[in-house]
Length: 96
Image (cartoon, rainbow, N blue to C red):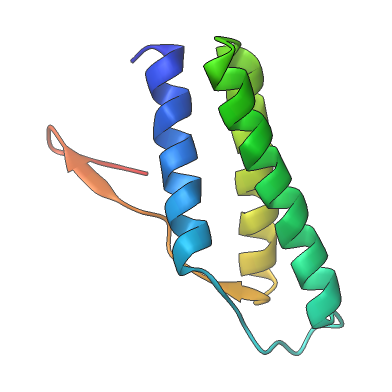
């Protein structure tokens, strides 16, 4: 898979998560303001990923979307947000 297609795939996956994600009531010491701030950072990394993809700087695009996913995964692990990453079947494999 080309870097361009890979970047586009991960960007689409993150966009879908932002559309479906909801902030959860959590027992950790993160208030809703802090969670929203981290979500905003993740959205900014997603916008960076799209910008770099459009500029044909695919390595930077992948790095940016990886930061986005990392922040989202951290919030999910802390129980601060709820979402599922899209899963697709392709040629007998399950892909993210």
